[in-house]
Image (tube, rainbow, N blue to C red; front, side):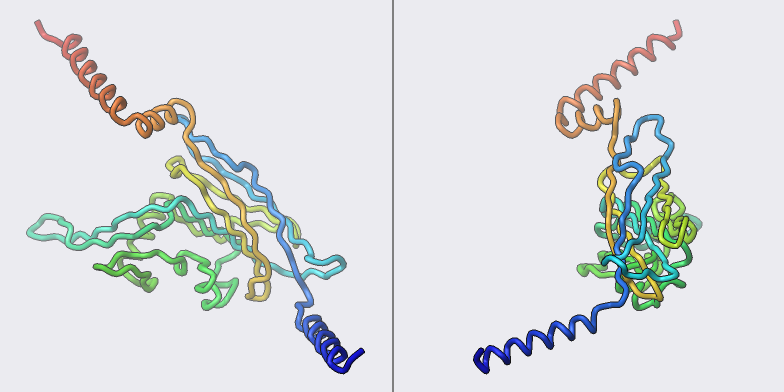
Length: 263
C-alpha cells in the first residue's frame, strides 16, 4: 500500500469514528395511523371526530427510549385568502375604517398537544418550527408588501380570534393522550362547516425541549351525494347551471303566485 493510500484510509477511519461519536445516543421514529383518511360531507353532516394513533419506536434495534416525550400535531386545511376589517363608530354608525388581507392562510388550523406548547419547547424552537397559533406564519398584504407580523398585531389577533370563534382555528393542550410512555392517541375534531379539500397532518415529537422525530399524514374532506352533484354541475357546466337555476327561480315564483293568488 502506498503512503497516499494509507493516508486516505486513515482519514476515512477517523471520519467514521467521529461520526460514531457525534451520533445521538438515542434515536426515535414515529409510526402513525389515521382512523379515516377521507371524510364525506353530506346534507346531514354534523362534524366528525377523527383519531390518530401512533407509537414511538427506536430508530435502531436495541436502542433505549427516553422516559418522557411531548407530542404536537398540526392539522392544516386548504389555503385561502381572507380579509379582516376594523370597524369604528362614526356619527353613531359603525363603518369599516381599515382592512387587512391574509394571503393563502390555512382555512383550518388545529394545534393539538399533550400539554401547552409553551411548556414543551423554548420560544425560539416554537417559532422556528411554527408550533402554536402565536408562531404560525400568517402572511398579510400590507399595501404593496407581503409579510408576517408580530403576534401582538391587532389585525392578526382579531383574525385568529374570529377563526377560533368559528371553529376553524383551535389550540388544544389536551387533545393528545399517551396511553403508555410510547403509545399515543390524538383526537382531531372536524366541525360541520369544515372546508373541503386536502388536509396535511404534521406530527412532531419532542424530548427535553428538542425536536427528536417528525412524520406526517393526510386526510381529504369531500362533498358527497346531491351536494357533490350540484357542485360539479356548477363547476363543469356553469352556463347550463345558471340557466337552470334561473328557470327554477322563475318557476317557483310563478307557482307561488298561483297558489297564493287572491281572486
